[in-house]
Length: 261
Ligand code: COA
Image (cartoon, rainbow, N blue to C red; front, side, top):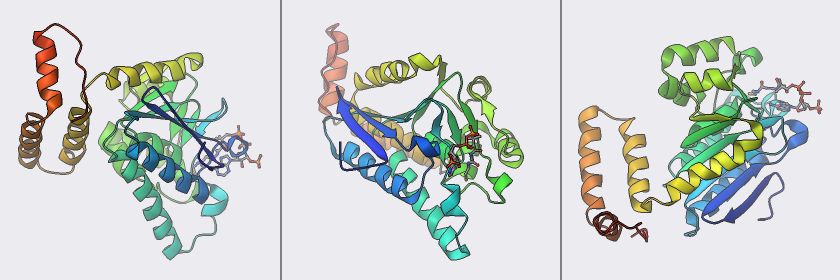
């Protein structure tokens, strides 16, 4: 534990588990919860024993049912912009952490909940999960990156359908359109997320970091610039001990022992 009251944090076997825990409000993101997420994500980023993050929600009903509507309702225009920017910055830090993160979506992932899940590297959900951007029903638009990351993940057409109708989709449909990586029965959610994490943990940590950087930064630039960055990062990999270990282990028909150097 880390002194947080709305977010539980623990690490085990290379995996940091972050649990948003405000079940009486379906884990809605008020300011304090967002700050606590930021703090534990930073801890996971700085902890050399952590290779992968898993983010989930407490209880069986919700991953996160959105930004806290009570808090939202009182925003002035200036505060609203600052509020969105602050939340975006937290999710941006998660996306750019340099370590893969997996959202284990155990129920409703609405509004800020879906935005949090989309800032994670991968998304695994329980069959019962519902995902949506319902903000227009409140007279607002998504403000924690939903208009941008959803369109990048599933294309503008499907993103706009979700954003303009505000209707949630179920896990199967989310899997079909590429919003989710895997869907499993609820009881298997955390084991499935951990199995995915364990596979990733066997890979070269520096390579993982550069792969994340190449994909995320590449999505924000031209193909030519992206290819050039990819080649530069590929070259950097060639300077690592991990690269030598990985290629040698293949030749020697054994598992590599990566050091992240
Ligand atoms: N912000 C603040 N409180 C929220 C919340 C949110 N985003 N989502 C749920 N809650 C609270 C409810 O107000 C309720 O609190 P109360 O018991 O003090 O009245 C509690 O969580 C349980 O939610 P409730 O609505 O009673 O559960 P339900 O099973 O009937 O409905 C949802 C579940 C998810 C469909 C419904 O809670 C909902 O639509 N939430 C808002 C989703 C949303 O618009 N998110 C985007 C915000 S920008």
